[in-house]
Image (cartoon, rainbow, N blue to C red; front, side, top):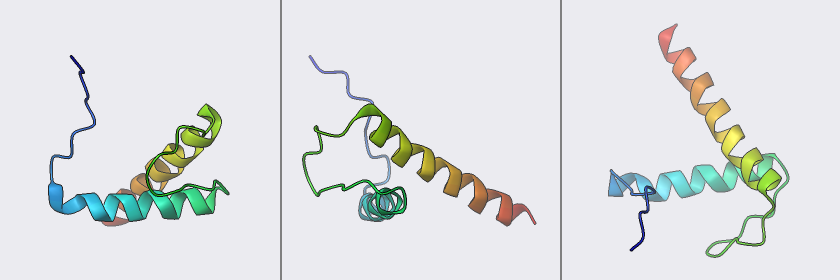
Length: 65
């Protein structure tokens, strides 16, 4: 039995999140493909996620101003 915690809570947001992920990958120079990306290194995957979090924090902080 699989315990997958990567559930989309807002299905309408899935397309936007995928677009955001692809943008972040381009910005950090990672060639992310639609579909399977199991050949990414941990460093590449981490740089994409880290860039996404950085941009989300920046957007939140701008909203506080």
